[in-house]
Length: 132
Image 1 (tube, helix red, strand yellow):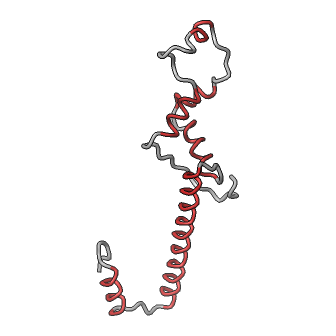
Image 2 (spheres, rainbow, N blue to C red; image 1 turned 120 degrees about the horizontal axis):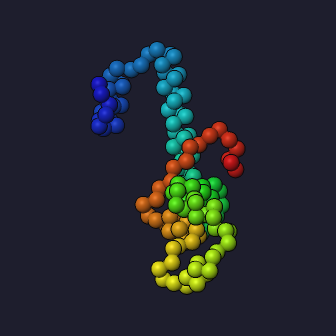
Image 3 (cartoon, rainbow, N blue to C red; image 1 turned 180 degrees about the vertical axis):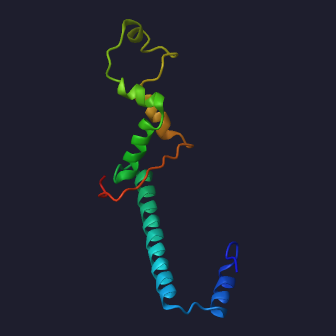
């Protein structure tokens, strides 16, 4: 039986008809099911915490900081502008500070990236401490 796109009751009926009797297989499947359940529950809990924190504007936990870091480092233009944010400005740049056609500074670019609804940063998770 190919379980893809089958209803849960059909799959359970098939398992009752053709039970897995090998103890090693049963142990493996039970352990994996518990592990996946814990992973999914942890993801749901973290999602609730993140949604609540973002809703109230709280910067707690790693998610807002990771989003900020990705807002800076994922785009070459923003990264270079951020690294040069403290460089001295020339006469022309100072005169154009209030001009509507001046280039955006690093903080404006980061804010645009942060607030972009199509920006979905992705981070690799390592076996590090939660704060890292």
